[in-house]
Image 1 (cartoon, rainbow, N blue to C red):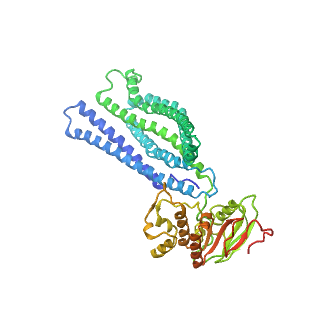
Image 2 (cartoon, one colour):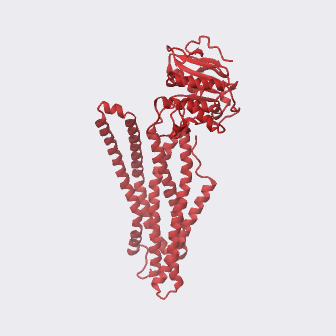
Image 3 (cartoon, rainbow, N blue to C red):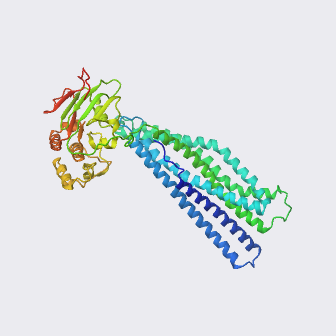
Length: 530
């Protein structure tokens, strides 16, 4: 999946408006400088000039506030698109995807997106406005006082030399600090997931020492970054002393008294404005380096394959009452597995048996299209899975599995997750009550740190499968099958709806009664499903 486009016409117009604000800031500063210089050199100046100084100061402040406001809106608009695209891509990772760790994903969502926002709001926009300000001031001096324009050149050259000297080492420190921060996030995520194991085996102290070593390496990189960043930010403050030094040494050949108070006042204020924006540009350099690294990290994740929801759609599976015909034809869930072929007719109740529980789980995930088949074909009512979008497929097929954890929401919202919008509230309550979830419990909120356990968690999964009203129900949930009272209710509801039911069970257990049994380990002829 590609990253959202930054340079849209709307955003280009927004940048043009921000550049115009820079020109207006420079004009306000120069106007204030000229009026202020005349006011200082001529105490009898009119009230209009006095008001011009005050108006210019107020206008300059307002323009800076507008710049900040519009820059933030510009950056947040793009980051919102990028965040949505990134999280959508991560959510759509295949269920068998590896290398996506929660700690690292959170650093991308928080740290990397923040770095991108800082570059767009305080880096790109600041650089654009600063360029507009510098260009406006340069044009003014070139037209009205070329001699003073040359006084600024050595100072700007000195500033650029400082930026160039800090660029490479600062980039290295930024990369190292972000690398160490990512490693700490991944390490901390691993500690949290295995905290009980570490505690009971006496590894708490060793884990904390390992964490401290990683933090020390990150802090060293951050201190180095702060050092070079400080040099960059301080370099703008040296512009004014450098201009004064150039004039004092007579580098431009001025004779004593050739720079009057009015010209000097304009130069002082213009230099102060330039120094302010030079500091902003120096900060933009740091933000740009961090942005480049952040975008590279996001791109690495975005390049991973993800499930497409609507792409390549050629046929529609409209929601309908009753079951559907499922055909599995020469399916292999991995390179080593045998080919599997069978047909489940509408309303059938089929038990899939295998010595490998992992193969059963992979097969059910593949039928649900949460992952891909290594080889073979799937079809519903004669329509191949390749011709149906996943979004439509998931309306027809639902999967019950312990991996389907409830999101943070009320119990009622979790039970009705994915249910048709037209489903009556009393039907939701009826189904929930059949699974021992009475109405007074449906308002209880499920928290991420306290998920439901035991029979309540099983009941939520089972009720959700019924209310989804899918035509094909896949059950890869040993806990549900063992909870015979809840499983009996689920089976009864599925029979009433006429849906097609497939259940997995490891070989060697007592088979469920009244199910058509298919042993996927015993298919010698590999006959193709019609």
